[in-house]
Length: 158
Image (cartoon, rainbow, N blue to C red):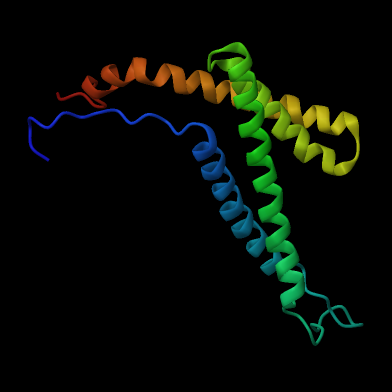
């Protein structure tokens, strides 16, 4: 890249592109999580508690349940987050911390609702909303400090 080539900022994905990108990322991370979870599943032992049972390794069906379940869960979380964030942003007419908090709250409630307890779903939603708000504030403030960080020395020359 030459010196006189302008650096053009890339707009973040919007609409269906953002939805598909987030869902694809959710499926990939959920599949990885499910495969690790199926591999680390505690093997059954024999009657003495020491020897391993004959079918120690997880079966293909069991592994597929873990991988598919993790992929479906995190794809649903990504879908819930993206749709909730986009809905609030379109209603308010701007992308701000309200849209991030609502998307985070709904995705946390989605995970908590799996336990079929309203208090747990609400608690997960609040926890995710706090994390989402913190990430949004950090994302907004990072460009303000980028120029300062670029010119700051991390050490002193004596």
